[in-house]
Image (cartoon, rainbow, N blue to C red; front, side, top):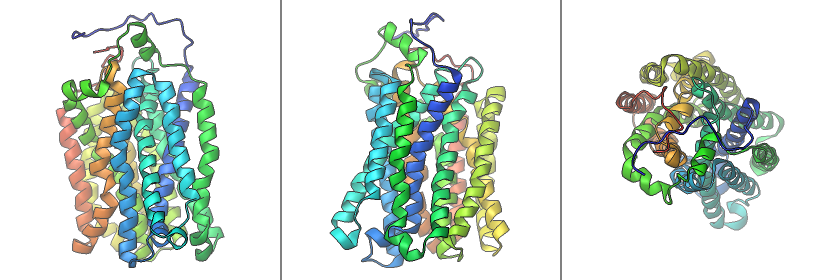
Length: 438
């Protein structure tokens, strides 16, 4: 089929998911998945280096930990292609369940993985394998959650519905960092490094069971159900995606770069820098991050509402311009020696993360037709992570040693400029019809 097809409002005789069930399932899955991911990010900044790379210097330990952090981002595009294929061929629901299960299993196994002192070189090798599995799982998670929300959304409310998976990261991050904060306050450094850091990883198993229960109660989205009824699925969605929709995929990926850079520079790198260089205790800086992430959570619904009201592009352009300017605040706010300055920087960056991230729950699915939407939205989302997040903490550690925090701030501003250019090249998608198959 080469012409555009739009289905009528009549849908197959299947139960319709309630708004509450859609919001809960799309939110809770991403919250759990990002909890898993952020648990590792926090552990990488605090303890992964000494436990798995003790034979190196302190700086080398940190760089090695950040490299293992980046492995998952390299795996995420592969996960988006793998789960995207089945999401476009088999359905959104079953693919979402599989991605959540993979992520949860890998996270739990990291919690029981012996350190270098016990099994030697096998420890970092197995850590990298499990980290790769985490990335595969998360690569398939977000796209399915976003489609679950937007393909069930009423007209004019796609960004609002797409906001629910975008809220998941805020809650997942708050839960992960909050738990590490409690552990830091309850345990000695020796207890934390010996066994305490494993507790958040092991708790993932219980959280995954909750997420699986919620998602197994869902019905397939009505948009995909219509595609099945009309036999409008392709055998190899990834082939069609790269041959016909490579431009929106790459522009969508570039538009995501600023979100990743804002988040991972202000959390993973700043946590490491704050503890090792600025002299903050773990619990103090984790407390600051838990406070700042509330601003990200508050910005998410505001930005989603605005993008339904005024369009995706105006909101993203405003957020992008502010993100460019925010890069210049990093050095003065973090080096002036006051806690309020550090808190202000973290709040600004995470608020802007929420502003630029919220519209993506609707924008990326709107760039692609039903037959390749899971693959396209997932690929755009995760390819952006390679530039904006995978090596961000690693490069930031290198940049700060070469030229100071102003160079790291320049990294944030550069990422924002790249995303601004991509957004300006995209068409406005607020009025896009998600029922279109091709």
